[in-house]
Amino acid sequence: MDAALPTGERLMVGQQVTVDIEKIAHGGHCVARFEGQVIFVRYAIPGERALVEITSVNSKMARGDAITIVTPSSHRVTPPCQYAKPGGCGGCDFQHIALEHQRTLKSQVIVEQFSRLGGLDVQCEVRGVDPSDGLHWRTRMDFAIGESGRIGLFANRSNEVVEIADCVIADAAMDLSTLAKRRWNGGDRIEVATSSTGQVSVSRAGRSISGPTQLVEKVDGFTYQISPRSFWQAHKSAPATLIAEVMANLRLESGEVVCDLYGGVGLFTAPMAAAVGAKGKVHLIESDRKAISDAQKIFKGVGNVEIHPGTVETRLPKIPDPDVILLDPPRTGAGEEVVTVMTRTHPRAIVYVSCDPASLARDAKLLLAMGYRMDSLVGFDLFPQTQHVECVARFIPA
Image 1 (cartoon, rainbow, N blue to C red):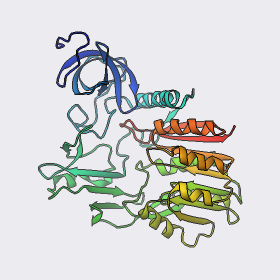
Image 2: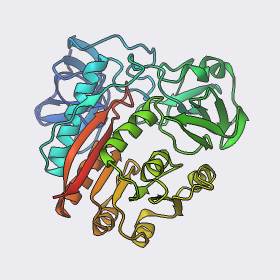
Image 3: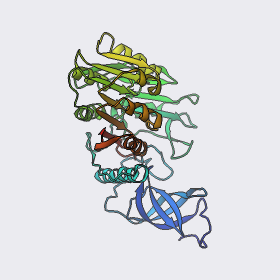
Image 4: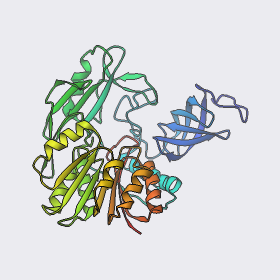
């Protein structure tokens, strides 16, 4: 039964209220309202009616978990993981939703973010990738240590560690059930990474515990030898999927000059260098020292690749007249300074790989204001069971 709440009185932590679940929102939750107050609800699906327990309150809204589903959605499924529930691990947001509908909801989030933050009316398909069940795809995992010394993941919006025996989205090659049996002293995180060539690396606080200190990744005929700590796309299918989409959007020709901004170890640099040929040039700009070190080894002796350690803001202005720009910025996006620097070089196309639709929408608004238009946008479900989604957008002069 709902606790009695006079109109206008603030919701309280621990209070339970029955509400109708409205639209999906950016961040892995849905919107509901009670007595005029907005509640961001996890473990619900738009269209459901649910009993929600309030978990936090501030001056603008409340947060809560759907603890009983009064009227379930036809898209509701039983989560494949025992920890995907209120009070459980915060690693996944959508295990209670059928995979195809997860993609529909992610598409709605992209459309809403572009409308609200970018002032743009867009449509965006979110495409699925293998494995088709959305499980055992993650090749990079970072575990905290619980009170009893077992590995675990943080609860949602909390520093509380939920100890786990296994993880259904982790690559099975990690053999987490064995790692979970071990007791770890201290609080340093445990990092596990697998490669496309079957390697498994386990490290702690940056120091190798087992496995190779360099991972060999092979994608579409290109080989990358990288540190387990360097950024690499987490989903097994992400590198090949993104290379295919990026190259289709770049439409590179022999002899062209390309800038690979936030280029990391050079995932996209390798196919771009092959496409522009010996008469062309790829300029990789990256600020992370570990990634730079890896990239320098990967492209040693490759004459049409130049690596620029440093920030995009300082390095890009020194590269004259690039034909095309590719950028894959961190979750915060590129921002006004980088967008300004990019557009001043007048590339014929800017291809943007984004792991956050909100920052992409904000940057798209800036690009449009500086004389570019977006002529392509697609999403990829490279983070199934979670609220995250990868987008690739193409911008050309208006």
